[in-house]
Image (cartoon, rainbow, N blue to C red; front, side, top):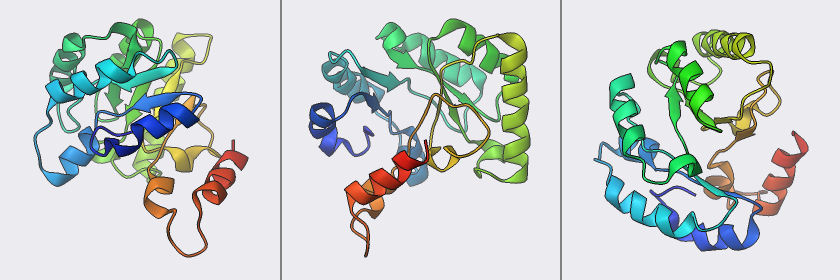
Length: 186
């Protein structure tokens, strides 16, 4: 559930096995607005009471590692959050995040903003090679905007998308039918 469109957060907690609270940075960035991290923290504070709920730590999509490290250090909810590694950042930062956090998100950004482009695939392969060389266990990686990747070669622990929320009312679609189609790909 995105902080940029939080209307269904209660329903998701009533129906879902687990819930990810998204900081809405992508939506805010696309609209050219400034994020309100204080409001996001207040929203998270209520919903992180649920033991299977976790949240994406605030991030700056076009920022640098310093920008994102500062936001990570300000995060008030400890390990109930997951930092974001942006694909334009160094792989050394990814390895550091994985060593320090139980879950890390990956966001497509910079020259790797287009998911499944040739440059994106090469960068993702480089990242997973480094991860597998650094640890004998597959880390808990969540791919932001990654639902389309469920049948691909990278071993993400979880992925998400707004596909169902946006497209469930198109001709021939229902939320249940779309969910079943995505679940069948796992």
